[in-house]
Length: 113
Length: 110
Image (cartoon, rainbow over all chains, first blue to last red; front, top):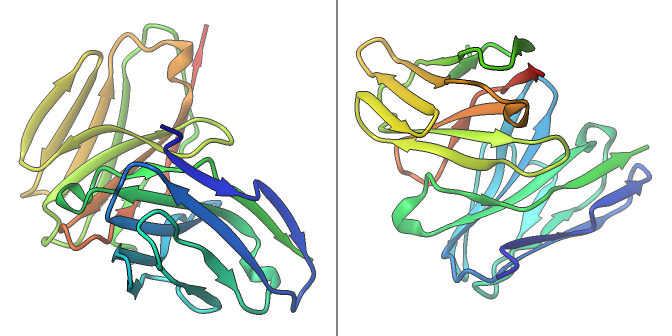
């Protein structure tokens, strides 16, 4: 099992550009989520999904879109990148019966100039 | 006021010392309490998971929850250099939204 795989690991964007962070898991987990991690702020939930075709907003959803067409994949789209979106992004998944036991990817470091 | 407050440290201790980490929270709906460990440039990994007041032990790690005081703790006994990491508390009412503390960075000196 690869677990949770995120790509790319590093990305530099210019203000206004768009991009997609990819996330895939091979554990057949229903629940998937995206967090951003900033110094002194901890992990903040951006969007989450409890199954294919179902998504919902977290604490900081503005500027991001998600979709869940399959159980395995949960991409995060930045529509028009801003310097405030410079962060480390983590994708995580879990069984819906145990929402506290998240399995995280290794992170995607994004810099917006 | 943040839902979860965690002292960011950093904390530096000699090998073999007891490490004490804690978080306070304000939302009485939280029912599940977790501690995650995050090594540098890696994703967090679940260390301890509990859902009731009291103590839970796993090897050198003890998680403590006091719901009446809205206070959770993690103790690491006989700390090792390999315990050097950032420790994040996380709480949820099981609505799929975890609230994380800011994390405490711990360095164990050999």
